[in-house]
Image (tube, rainbow, N blue to C red; front, side, top):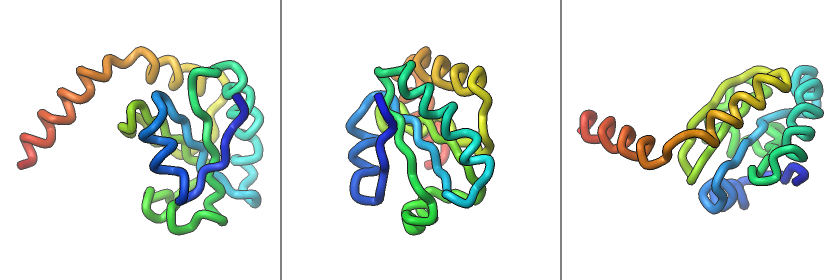
Amino acid sequence: MATVELTKDNFEETVTGNGIVLVDWWADWCGPCKMFAPTFEKASEEHTDVVFGKIDTEDQRELSAEAGIQSIPTLMAFRDGILLYSQPGALPPAALAEVIGKVKELDMDEVRKQIEAEEAEEA
């Protein structure tokens, strides 16, 4: 599956309406972003069960601010609408494959229990 362009209009729907979603926050002027793009694109072809989205931080400034993006490229991984991973920096192919594998392996019932426990503790 090729990458999809995400905007403020389709971001929420994409992240919550699909199982696993990887989001690459990038900009055209960013050298590391350009280096990471082929790795991200290749992974999208290898993992057809995952949605790969790209957000141009220059074009989507409001969405970038809402997400707290301070450095690009930043990779975010969502599963069932839950943010599981968010790190700046261009990943090499093996590291990206590892992130994808770990997100796929997670027991989401256990993740939800942990979130509920943390929220109860804070309340």
